[in-house]
Image (cartoon, helix red, strand yellow):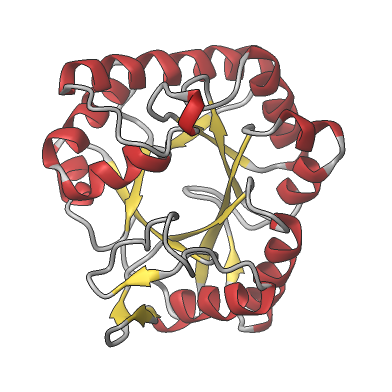
Length: 263
């Protein structure tokens, strides 16, 4: 699979899910899953447990949404959004254990796992640190190397994943602001999150159709993304996903999961 955007053609729309049990209870998670083509499921590190994994996998299977693992630093206090200072061996081990746990739950649910996308600080650390990216790849490979590894579009981790024998998929973000160097604006800084559905929708279309994204304090950035994320834990996530999906379809973009057919 190419990492380049197919202009006006096809893209995956994904969401990070299984992180908020209350969203499963009140229906927000199902509403979000009805709008996306792929789901990145928390698997016991930053969030998630056996019960939430089983519930999200059942929803994904019923709705025809492609399922993937979303391992993070095992630090629930920070929701996996703080670098944990783990050495590569420990990163490899926790990624393996988390992916294996979700794979076991997926097997019981009769659902195939198609991809792995690291979460939060682990994702960002992999984008700028080859040793972290390689450790993630080794951890996943201990379970399977027949899945796609998702990483920040334009970052070095994608090349590391390819070097480790994986299909690497570049990801763009509808609901996050970009710095001039192509990294995501840290959440601790103002303006990091696009909470306005219209703003997120416009950014998603630019990424999917033009391969461009606006940057804070700099020129536009070329962004070769094959999948676009909407964060499931963000306020108003469902409204953002509704707007993003509608805008992509209106722009003539076909939504399809990684390695799968249309939704």
